[in-house]
Amino acid sequence: MQYRLFCSILCAGLTLGAAPLLSHEFWIEPEKYQVNSGATVVARLRNGQEFNGAEQPYLDHRIARFEVIKGGSAAPYEGRMGDMPAFSADKTDDGLTVIIHQTQPQTLTYDTWEGFQAFIDHKGFTGIPGQHNARRLPDAGFAEQYTRYAKALVAIGSGEGSDLDTGMETEIIALANPYTDDLAAGFPVQVLYQGNPRPQVQVEVFAKAPDGSVAISTRLTDSQGKSVIPVLPGHTYLLDAVVLRPAPEDKDHVWESLWAALTFAVPLR
Image (cartoon, rainbow, N blue to C red; front, side, top):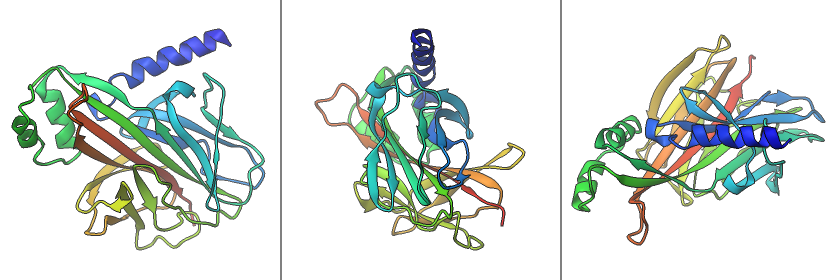
């Protein structure tokens, strides 16, 4: 047990330490997105790129919030230190289950401007270099704090139900049920920040086909923070939207990033 825990912590340290420097995403990956009523739901925490990443263990000191939401009622999830997969729940009831995981904030330091520029370019931020210069910040050796807000949708039995605003500081809300609704016209979502819609922001879409190949695209939200994502049956999806904001002046870091993620599957009809 102690050896497993040591290996889990070592693995997490190696993979999480430099995560956003390379625009790594963090997500919840259910072993099965659809299970029978009463079956065990197993999910992994992953950190990586292009919808492929290293598995992360359950480490309570890195968790700010880990919950299971069913029918609007939330229950905290508590695992064991070092657990991989990080999530396993039995005695599951029929309906749509929402799993959320919020990390504790972590920091990284940009040794070069190029690393930060690559990040802001990838995530579609504009005006950041001007803000950086206006604040008279250095071009290297500055720190960013990052926090993850991940959500997964799992269908149990009928899978009936709906996603909701969970109160996380930023999140992506599914406005349709991918397991029961007709998605021929696309999958509607809304991006929130501090409970308000985020208009005209980038949503990065990772679509994994049955053969494991991943197609990547981006969409913009409208004036109400909404977007419709084209989806295909038999595919699994990771949606990602990032907030980047100046840090308060009394902090050692100068930028704060908040990463919202949503994972779900579209079943074959």
